[in-house]
Every structure is written in C-alpha cells, then in structure tokens.
Image 1 (tube, rainbow, N blue to C red):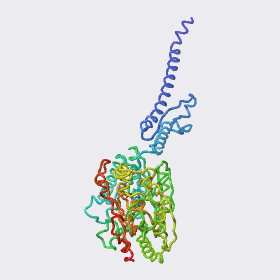
Image 2 (spheres, rainbow, N blue to C red):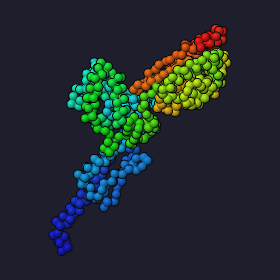
Image 3 (cartoon, rainbow, N blue to C red):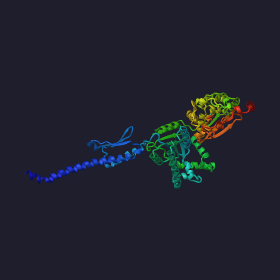
Image 4 (cartoon, protein in one colour):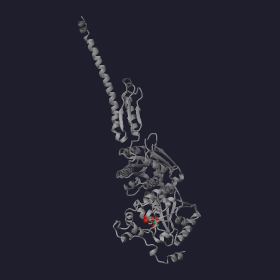
Length: 563
Ligand code: F6P
C-alpha cells in the first residue's frame, strides 16, 4: 500500500527535489555573481595598482544575511585602511554600477602614491602677466642652488619655434583652430622635453605654460603621474593693479613677441591676448579637481596649499611663502686691497693696504651720493678688511658671519707658491675640482654655497643693499643671481676695487661693473692646463697672478698720486 501511495505521489516528490535543486542553484549563482562584482572592482583597482600606489587589495566576505544588504570592498593602503562601503539597499545592478564608478573615480582622484624621491614636474597655471615666468625662474635658481637640478621649459619659446614671426593676439583665440593646434603642439613639446629632462636623472622640471583649462590640467596630471613622476601645480593670481601693470610693462619691454611692434601696437595686442585667455580661464577648483597645488596671490602675498606633500614640495612651499616681487638693485664689492692681497697671501684677517683705504674712501663717495636720495643698507662680513672698507658709507651696517671668506684651513695665510711647496698634492687636487675641493680643516665652494643660502634668500627681497665681501663669497653670490653654471663659479673674475651693480628686470639681472680708478693687485688665478699631481712646480704656478714681491717698488707713491 505504502509502496503504492509513494508510487502515486512520485511526481510530487520529483517536484520537491526539483525545487530544492533549483533554489540551491539560484543561491549559488547569486553568491557567484556578487563575488564576480567584487572581483571586477578589485581587478580594475589592482590593474591600476602601480599607478595608484595601492599596495594590497582584499575582499572581505560577510555572513550570508549581511550579503543581502551590504557589500564591502576594502582597499588597503599603507598606512591607513580605506573602505568603500555600499549603503544598505544599494545592491541593485544599477546602484552597484554607480557605486563601482564612484569607487573607481575615488581611486583615480586620490593622489597616486609616488615615491618622495621621484622627480617632480611643476606646472604653472594662470593668465599672462601674473608673474608665472618670474616665479618659474626664481624657483629654478633657488632649487638649483639647493642641489635639485632644475630647468624651466617655457611654452611660449616652443610656440615661437612654430612661427617665423609672431603675428598677433589672434593665435590665442579659443575658436582659432590653427592657433589652438599650434599652442597645444607647443605645450606637448615642452612637456615632452621636461619629461626627458626628468628621465635623464634630473630632479625638477618647471613647465611654464598657462594651463588655463580643467581639461588641460587633468590630462597633464594623469600623464605625469602615469609615468611615475610627481606633479605640483602652482597657480599665479594677481589682483594687485600696481604689480599687474609692472608685469605688463616688463612683458612689453622684454617679450620676443613684441620686438617688432610699436608700443601702442604691443599694448593693444597684449590687451586682446589677455581677453582671449580670460574667456578660457577656469581657476583651479579644489573641490572638483583632485590636484596637488599651490595658489600664489600677488607674487607671494598669500600662498595657499592644497594636498601638498613631499620633501621637495614642502621646501618649495616654504620658498614661495617668503617670496616678494619687488624690483631691486643690489651692489656688490670686494673689500679694498688688503695687506695680504699685496703679498699674495690667502685668508687671514688682514687690514687694508694704503690703496685699499683709498678705495674705501672712493666707494663711500660713490655710494653716499646714492644714500642721500634713497635708503641704503650695507652688509659686511665679520672680517676687518670688509668693515674698514664700508666704514665711511653713511648707511646702516650689518656684519654677517656667513659672508666671511672661504676658510682655507691648513693653508690659511699661505701664498699659492707656499701651498705648492708644502702641499703639492692638495694644490693639484684643488685645481682638478675647485668647486668641490675642501681645504683640510677648511671649506669648499660648495660649503660656502650652503652657508650663503639664508643670506641669498634674504637678499632676494631687498633693494639697495651693498654687500662688501670677499672673492670666493662674491663669486658664489653673483653666480646665484646671474644663474651661472656651478663649475664656473670658482673661476669667475670679481676684481678688487670694482663695484658690481645688479638691476632686476623680469626674472633676470642686468650686470654693470663700475671700476674705480685706484690701482690694486690682481688676485684671479685661472685654472692651469696641467692639473696632474705629478706636474712640475712651474706648471702648477703658471697662472698665479703677480703680487707685491714682483710689483714695482714705487707702488705706494703711485697710489698716493692717484689720490
Ligand atoms: O686671495 C684673496 C682670497 O679672498 C683669499 O682669501 C681666498 O682664499 C681666495 O681669494 C679665494 O680665491 P680662490 O678660490 O681663487 O683661491
């Protein structure tokens, strides 16, 4: 009977078994799909791992009942654990897709973790005449001095390579297709060269362009970070009318674009060019653009940093916040001829020779005339010969230890001939690499550059300062302002009894040498051809300038005659 009744209900049992299998398959499929979704999010993230700097990605499974409401994807970044949590009820395919997109955009918006030590591209942003080029070149000078090999890539120079001659503002109109093509091509070329510079092992490239649209910045940001370089945008804003006018005047005077135009033509053209740019300009929006950037207002009046991290970037931020953009004139002079100079001795703390005193007098006459009209300040070293030289200048004075002459260590007080006699090997090593050579117990040129850093930063924001210094120290200071090659510094000719006047124009300095007619010895020793440690004494001393022992004995009478 029982068998009969089972047989009678067999279709019922079959239907029950079928339901069981069906629900099991549905359950499995459901879980599988969720697993796939989480994997698809993760695989995209993992795919971009090297770019985004995500170190590890892992999914966390929840209990079955939680799966219905929540889906958790944990993106593990060092040092913090980041999670993108989907809200309950967001498990429909549409919501999943939306949340996935959000998660992905979050990932790409987050700054990719690129090593602190990776090369850095600095991209300027802003309208023309906002001081971008000045900032670029000052920053480059500062960074180079601090050992970060830096170069500026000026977009307008690349643009000029595509045109036989600058035509007009028309090229900057957004709807001028040919003009836009030339401008984008120039920007691409400048960035390509900047990237090559960084790939060559240099530390910083500054892309001096306008980068006025969001799209341009997004593309640049993505391209540079994809290559594993760091990127920092610096936006220059200028609301100060006086500063703006000054910048405009400098562009009109010094821009290669306006060389062949009359002043009226140039003013009109620049005004129209500015209007074209204003129509295209989208200031950086910290909310919608995930960029690391610094906004510099009025050339350093206000500096705001957004998402700025890293050693180099922090240093740059510090430099920008101390920067001012005043036109400046600076004067540099070595002390008057000292008693040591006369006999060819180096270092020491000698007083001035009679001719050196005459120079001190002549210098005071020259500068006091200036001091009568404009405030002047004098900076000297702490050594007697500079203080004596500045004594008669009617202006406030500061003695600064960092301006003291190169410390020649065991060679202090010797002549070059005595150095060759006592330490021929040291003398040869110095000739082989004068920039880096450090006297035993003394200093190198690199050491002086380091101790001069704060003085130079302070001097950059001064006007009408007279620095009364020494041969090696002034070589470094002038080299800084004139952007000289570092290896050239130790051989720059900074003669005695000469005032060196530097006047800023744009980001450059005009150099004037004012030689006062008071005789003095020459202390400039050129690099000899033979720098080998086996050279003869004659070869080692071939470029040593003559000094008192070899000068005519009536030198003192001559100097009196000049007075
Ligand atoms: O000779 C004058 C002097 O100022 C020395 O005191 C100093 O050691 C020297 O110049 C630096 O010049 P150089 O590096 O060419 O020897």
